[in-house]
Length: 270
Image 1 (tube, rainbow, N blue to C red):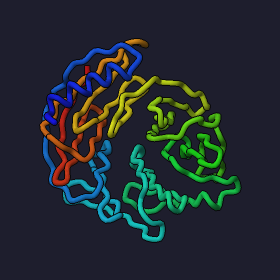
Image 2: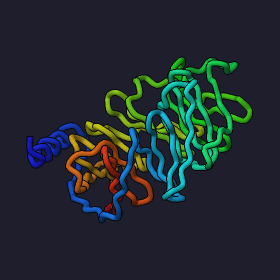
Image 3: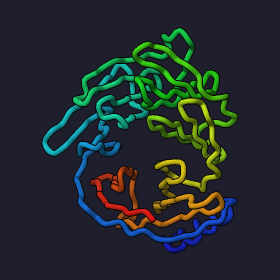
């Protein structure tokens, strides 16, 4: 199937699947640089210019000739990495229900085994929050909570979720998720849950905030912004890559990861 035909079909799908009205535009980002990389998974950049990757289950932080590494074979494969706070990096090992926190040189700060907690917790989603706390989605009660990793205290903040999570993302103050029916929600640290509407079908997605997100479908990349309650503006991002493995967005910098390199773009959203 040609790329033009895929665009037409996907545009038709969006118009049928979203209840809100929408407009379509195009964004042409500016290429900045290319970087050769040898990794299984590219995880993004921090504000200090380091990029993060996983290769053979070894977590690495790299800038120029400077490299830091961390591995923990006893906990199995790394499930999720949160680099929101580069001074306290979160590595999640779901098979062992455990988390490791690392400092900025990838030295271990602490290791948490949630199976040993006084309140039973089976973690299926996790991320860094505020005030020495971690976001935790507890699969046992299907609720979002906050875990204080200094006090080893856990508190539930949300009501039980009615549908399974297919994607989640966190920042310091908010837990975002998309359920299996493509409905998007957010929960703040006080437990206020907000419905953010229906999502189009996607292969990968990165949530910027409650109104904005970037998603891919069939190797095409799109930026979405909710301008008004009944108007979504969906813009195709016209990158040079015909196929890609992953994308990351941070502070108007778009990184496209392929099997051989990272392409860096400057992107100005409408």
